[in-house]
Image (cartoon, rainbow, N blue to C red; front, top):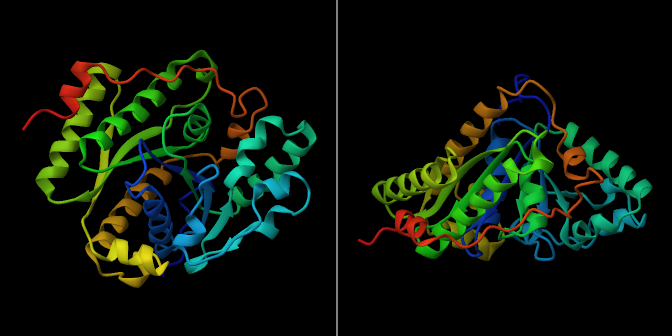
Amino acid sequence: MTESTDHVRSGYTVAIASGKGGVGKSNVAVNLSLALRELGYSVALLDASLGLGNIDLLCGLNGYWNLSHVMTGARDLMEIVLDGPSEIQIIPGATGLKELADCPPAARKHLVRQLSEVEQSHDFLIIDTSTGIHNSVRQFLTAADLVFVVTTGEPTSITNSYATIKSLAISSIHEEYETRATPRIEVVVNQVDSQEQYDKIADNVRKTSRMFLHSEVEAAGYIPQDVNIPAGVMSRKPFFLSHPGCPAAAALRRLAKRVEAYASHRSTPGQYFSRLLEPHEVLSSTIPIPALQNTSELHKLTPAA
């Protein structure tokens, strides 16, 4: 493992999202964290899958305490942080994050201070968000520096991923977000059979976003079908560690280098939790959830063979 370099400012935030479950979103979050750690960077991983967190299981850990216990004062933040594989630090969010909207201002300020300390003490903060496009999920995504939307080649996965992108595009032009920089949004295609399949999916998403959302959405890369991925889930050991030479691990290394390149161009330290927990925006956005894709969008995304 190489030593961290000083050209990456602390707290660069990458949120991992998906339009539907079962696409490997959490696996991407865990193994991307490990790939960045291999490059020598310090990494914190926040499990923000509200009520359905499984990061600890994927890492072979058994966590009990979460942010709800910090909010009630039962635990300090560092008492709930789990020491993950390769020295990544895991913050169990779970149901505690749902309660932020009702958190008293003094308790919220205390929580933000503790979370910000963790953020500023790490080079990268990876956020494993919930599936879908609910307002609470969008709060986590819009506060990030970079959003990876994970999809597979299945038509339902592609269309749901596009709905997530559409939701973020609408958020970026809403008046509540006019003063906030829009996160960079890119697609990661998982469980890919071939380069040709990836190129087709990436091109369809790019063209559809440009045509209907007037947004440039790039494809960050793909992760190939690899038997070591489900094997890692069953053994509760990330494939990046159990089979570091496998094709999927190589794909995550490429993704980590891409993230590193973006982070090196940012001039200011991260303020993710301050943005996320601003009192007037805490998990209570009134931005409407966009309608399902119209027929033209669907045909563009998933054209008939």
